[in-house]
Amino acid sequence: MSEQTINISFPVKQGILNSLKETQAEFTKEVLFSTALLFYRKRKLSLGKSAELAGYSKVSFIKKLQDEQEYIFDYNEKEMDGIFDNVANIQ
Image 1 (cartoon, rainbow, N blue to C red):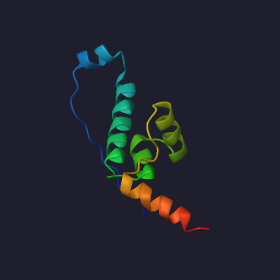
Image 2 (cartoon, rainbow, N blue to C red; image 1 turned 90 degrees about the horizontal axis):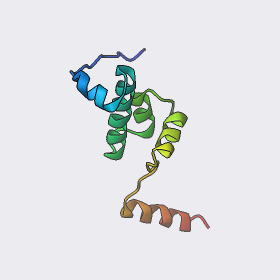
Image 3 (cartoon, rainbow, N blue to C red; image 1 turned 180 degrees about the vertical axis):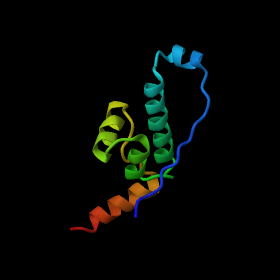
Image 4 (cartoon, rainbow, N blue to C red; image 1 turned 60 degrees about the vertical axis):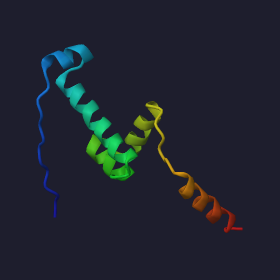
């Protein structure tokens, strides 16, 4: 069973693309990556789903995050405490 794909479009003035010195394809790719990153940061999408939204494989998305100096794994203090507690209990 394949998942249905929908197209979403929105208007962008040509002057914006000119200011960015980007083609429509470059702009679209950047918007998709930025949106995927936003949803990943907000923990609304997993790493894999964010990569899918951005049009990357999971490994390529991780590489892109590294290139952009973005955190791949961003845990809050409570989550880090839990991780360290679990590591301490392994012994």
